[in-house]
Length: 294
Image (cartoon, rainbow, N blue to C red; front, top):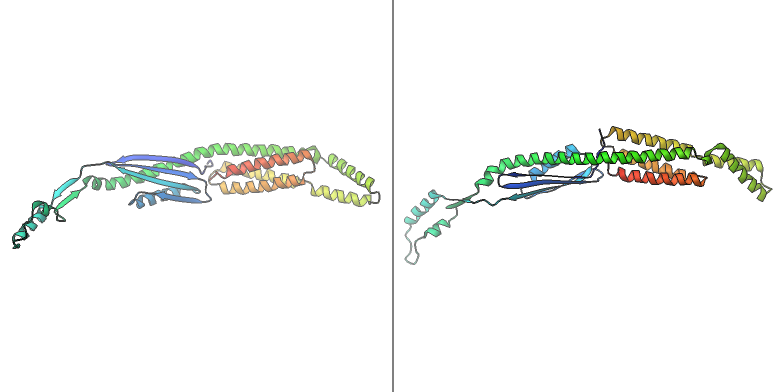
């Protein structure tokens, strides 16, 4: 299983009877899964079905879902309700109207509510079919978004592996740094002690030597390098396992940042400091990319 990105876009469109519809989904980074819907009036049910499909497909990411719907103009069907009209004519025939009131005209009778009915047969016929097509379209567009996020995730995985390789190289360089070799540490301490004794002959050489050894022990970066190697190995394992590992990779990136900061703080040599700074830069790049991982 490969890792997936949280960013992607997909669109699915179709025609059902007199309707043209399209689903669009845009996905960006998010701490959790957040689905936001924008729908035409009366299509809330279709939106909730789309939400359900998305929740089954993804774990993280902010998804903006848009459904657009247009209707082609179709001729309306006009029907005269003859029973109602006949009832009105019969009722008026039984009524004796005052001389000043004229009998009802045809247009007046047709204006009575219920006499003339306007029907949209096309809309009634495609209502059920439209609902089915929208559900199928939602499933297809979510599937397309999953593929887009997966493709970007595969590319992202290669970039992250490259950063980890660079980290391994820098950790190896730090381990082999001449400044960390016992002979170099001893020579540097001896030079510092000699310089201090020359400046202040009253200092106790044995006491000064003990303090120098203590400082050298505190400046040792062995533990930081070991932890960095362990974090790099754990990150590779997560990338190989795949799935929704973004949060755990982000945690590892934070730990790598702490170790590289400590390495820089303890470095007692310019070359080792440069390695630490390079390591910090790569770790930061790694963490920036990890923010895109689901």
